[in-house]
Image 1 (cartoon, rainbow, N blue to C red):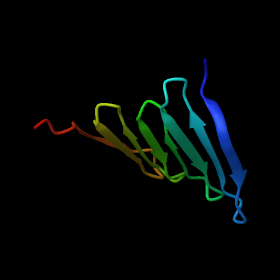
Image 2 (image 1 turned 90 degrees about the vertical axis):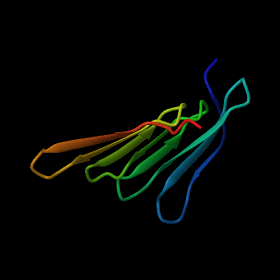
Image 3 (image 1 turned 180 degrees about the vertical axis):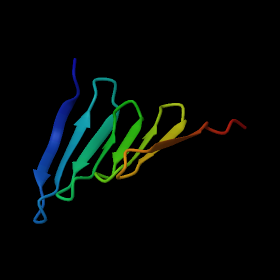
Image 4 (image 1 turned 60 degrees about the vertical axis):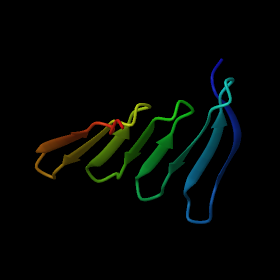
Length: 86
C-alpha cells in the first residue's frame, strides 16, 4: 500500500509541506519551496534535496551521499561519499 499523507499545507510564504507514514511505521516528509527548491525525506530513510538552481544531493538508506552540481553552461560534476563503516 502507498504511503499515507497525515498532514499537509502551505505556509504564508507559499511553501508547501507534506508529512507521510508507511504501513511499516516509517515517517517521511517533503517541502516544496516558492524559490524552486525542494526536499524529500522518504519513509525508507533516503533523502533528496534539489536547490532549484543546479545543486542536488541524494542520500541512500545506507548513508551513501551523491552530490551533483550543474553550471549554467550545462557542465556537471558529481561527488560520491560512501557511508563510513565502523
